[in-house]
Image (tube, rainbow, N blue to C red):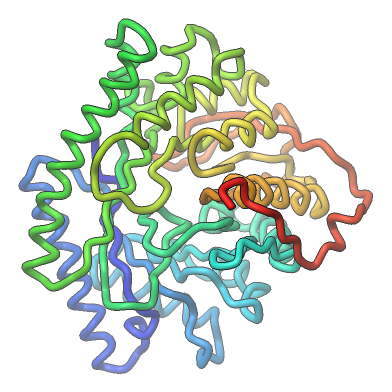
Length: 402
């Protein structure tokens, strides 16, 4: 198990160019490096430290220049990546420009209001437009830094979803822990044993993480939000959620039993006791998991199955490679699916969709990126015709928990 990120949360004013605000950002960067070293000393590998803000300040006359400035300052003070947070409506059309001008800046759009649970049709359509425009950045890689958010609350340490709650500075931990699920599934005598093994191992590791984090919070007067123990994968078999699921079912992903496997692993995370924040569910990022990517290349996975599994597990549709000519209407309908699932189940979901220019369904996918495996483009059903959904301004669905 590794720490994917120690994410520090702060108000957007810390990225302003005035001297006192640069001083505040320098202090946050120093805290992040102290936190990194403290966890290394406790025996954890820390992959990144990240900064999550609460949005682009309304007074910024040039959001593209602001994004470049934020990226420069964040890197100067030791943060590898920075999330600007959910973009306000007037700035949403500028997001592709901001991504094109930077390399480490992330941003999002709320397609479901976190407070009311209303699906925002205009935000859905704008998110689809951003995805289409960002697909032309770095051969589709630009969409790595954008996600549509449904019912995602502040304080989540995983990117792109991370954003600040507007209060005092805080931090949270995101794990890369798919290897725990692999080990539990491989050693178990049956599914119940795999469930208990994973739950117990998460509690042991989370207790170690929390002990360090709580001590840091007291020593530096920085709020500790908690741990998002979603078992993020790395593109090796030893750290693959897909491998863990296949060990449970004895079948390739997509075969009967896959949904039950996802539910079992997710429930183990849910039953584990630790200070939690964020998703705390199963992550199925297609291009970040070597088995998921391979099954996609083999044609065994489709977008509908991934959505179905999201009903019982984690974060929604993540790093999903799509045909480069996918229509804006098809993206709108897919985002409405994610939003509706999120609202009805009252759970946080995201959509990080990656149309790849020049690619069609079944084509091979390769990016020179350490966190990505080679995969294949998934198909998206639906033509360019418009129905009532595309014209819907707002949709209020009743949550099953209401």
